[in-house]
Length: 121
Image (cartoon, rainbow, N blue to C red; front, top):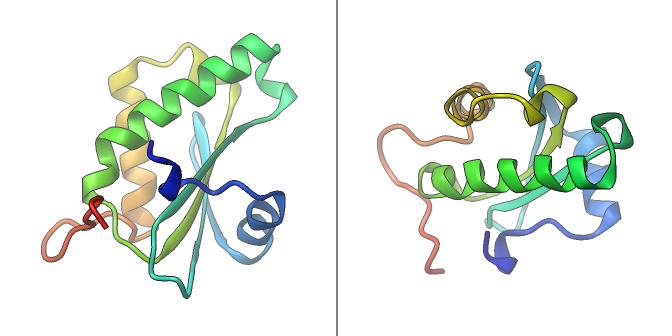
């Protein structure tokens, strides 16, 4: 995922978690909040409940790979936080992609028809 699309600051993560809307799945928790900047920013995190540092990093890498594939379909103007849950480590990649896609669709971040997000901006 390109640096300009990343949510980096701890305050941004907290703002999205506290003020945003959350959607849950056994693999991942999704929190979304619209932003005034009109740009898509995504943050991915995993708590110690997921496992060791190796497991947490693996979970984040898997979620980044899923988001990279879905990025062209995502709508601009959102701050998105994905929080990994322990089953993300053993989930089939296709199931993980489908679950994230389902959550993003429920949150109205995925654009099915009409204007799409342009990652060249």
